Figure 1 (cartoon, rainbow, N blue to C red):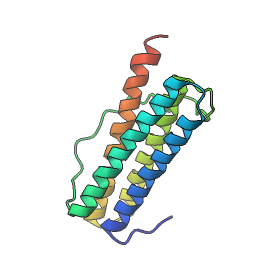
Figure 2: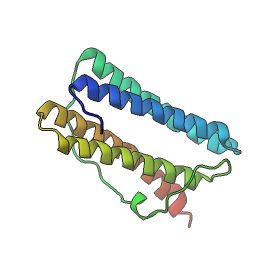
Figure 3: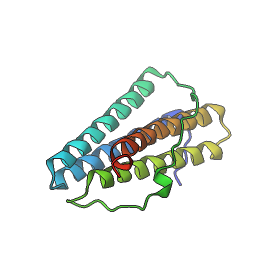
Figure 4: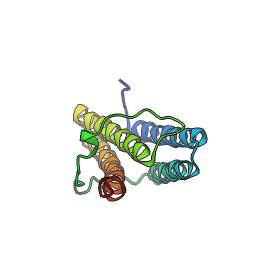
Length: 151
């Protein structure tokens, strides 16, 4: 497990994680057979680019944000089977993949917040966890609206 010695270490880690997500979604877009799914993955990548940009702004301006309110968890991702990325994946599969990815990021930042005694680092990890839970909620709402309601 990576050891964080400063807020800058945390931000660098989070910025790198966002870039990995951008790369992940762009790679899925490039491999998909379906234009609509390509578009969805490019949109997901665009969201991650915004998150990365926000983190870069925080790092550059040295302005720390405090954790906000908790985000509703619909727990949809908890009841769905993991899916593997494939060139012919459906929109439902794309949303499941995205929900699971955001949930994993949330759990990581939550765990890291529990591992530190530094209040500034704890706050930053909690803020990052909250941001990931917002991303997951966005995908859960989309899944609820377009997949569950159609079935």
